[in-house]
Image 1 (cartoon, rainbow, N blue to C red):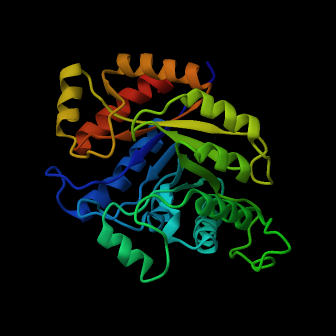
Image 2: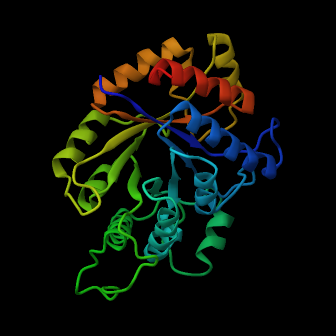
Image 3: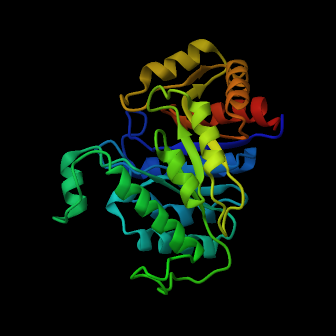
Length: 308
């Protein structure tokens, strides 16, 4: 197999192991530095609006994390696009890209706020559809607008044609459409990368979604060929017992652990997923609660999957 590009997703949920948001934020910086040294390809933070989340504006963390690391790409997985202006999202991530060229990822998602009160606060009285997932047609149109703002291809008949997205730079952050279902088709039409999330539950015919995405992909100025990755959730530890203890302590009901076990288990399962999906890009949402568990798990995976 060709070399694996291993990414790490961090939702920075609060827990008894780190009940204070400031500690969770410090942990983000510390684990990003650790992953960078281990040879991980990407580090993404998520957007959540709940009492147990350390932050709700992950895009503000991106340049901080990039400034603390050297090689690893950093980004958000995923920006809740329904609450953002496509123009503002493009401008925010272009700014980070200008500061750290070739190291910024922009993942977008169709989801809504985890809490209805947060949803109402975010829309601030503006019409925004029903609470929950964003309307698929509206979402597809918004993803396409983000892509157009990023690569300078806003159509001549659009009111925003000719608007400058500052800062003007030669490069662009990598745009990823995250999710399942229609996410692959949306990514293909927009000339974006596709990240299939397996930790939200079963994905019928996942490899077929990849094949459809690749067949329908429309090249653009910022991405000439299709690029698709898979995201799993789980824990890696030296023993099965230690890994199962991490699973037992995982509080979230919204994200289902996909791989839990030793490095040998991970190697076997990751090899299978790479064969099934024909991909070299794997992301994992770490469900470990403590910094020690996270660091040890990352070290074990780097050795097993990256040979480092």
